[in-house]
Length: 526
Ligand SMILES: *Cc1c(COP(=O)(O)O)cnc(C)c1O
Image (cartoon, rainbow, N blue to C red):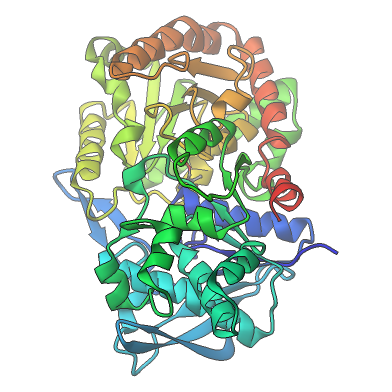
């Protein structure tokens, strides 16, 4: 029988108006639920009802991003009538359990501390808000609260899937339950491992959460274990990813290259689960325009131009900027993290500026910085400054979200991606673009080495180079490919361009679909 899976994640990106997501991690979780629904698989999602969602980020008069949070309405959620309770920092937190029934056979259950009388009412207010100790409380809510909610609902999962390390405390809770039933620690550990799988993401040690035992003790995560036992699971300080690897039977990285990186990164974690590489995919029904998916030849071009015109209209409505449908248009929408190098293309002003002035190129940017990330905000301010300098050919769309993501990965001609290799674990926006015939121009990082046939379905830049001087190497390569291949093909060889669009769509439609990914999860992980 097909296994019943409980999929735990801090965020779910299901729809632009349901703002309980921040970025790639949540979109992945949302696409997995949608694919499970399409494939009629018995999965349930477990997450948090973020009452104020993730930050809304606009630009002020000076072009600096500023943050706002709003009360979000989720009128479509059903009250299950169930309330569970967890203890954190010595206080009881009552959690209402809401159900999102949008995906029938794949319900999503959301925990909510916004219950009168709770001392920690606002702890489920802002996604990725708060600080170290509060993050841990949120993880108890997700992990322990999630397990208790499933129990109350009468759902008995065969497999618990932790997407990234935020739900890992649920693994400790499952272990504690076994010990309380009388099992020895080692036996209990072996037993619960058989039911847990874990997806690892961030390929940088510093990006993986770890906690001092003092905080773990205070918040209440260590209850029922000796320090030595906890050390065996998470090390010192207690690493959430090492713990995830040691509490699961199998773990996965999110692209083949990321698999290599993750194996190397965690090779010293003794007793870790084997790390498989299961490349992410995106939900076709959400991200692929069906007129483009089906068309060929001249029809494909016309379908694409219709999407482009639609995007340009929306840009004009939002920003008052009129871009030209006949000009080569490059899109770049990413979280403003330094390794993504959003403003790389501007670092050769002698080459890029004439192209922008002459109208050979149009650039459309979007992205948010985390509220506490001053460096990220500098990047956005810089992009906004470029839009002011080149008002006819550079646009920055504020408040990046699913709606903007859909618009740009359908409407641009080229999708640019230039992270520092190998720091981009997957990079699913490129898959969305590829499915719509928007040609990837990308560093060979994340999923792209698996999809790229240079000059056939998109272009690679940088040749897979890794090193101190990668900024220079990648930048030279970017302009080399842009000037000698992308621009001449776009303006002088429309037939070839259309052929490349078709090749891109064919490459991505099945291979980088969430349906393929979820099937692989069932075959290889669960
Ligand atoms: C697809 C998507 C992402 C993730 O894409 P990356 O390529 O990893 O940046 C993030 N945010 C939104 C709104 C998306 O639609």
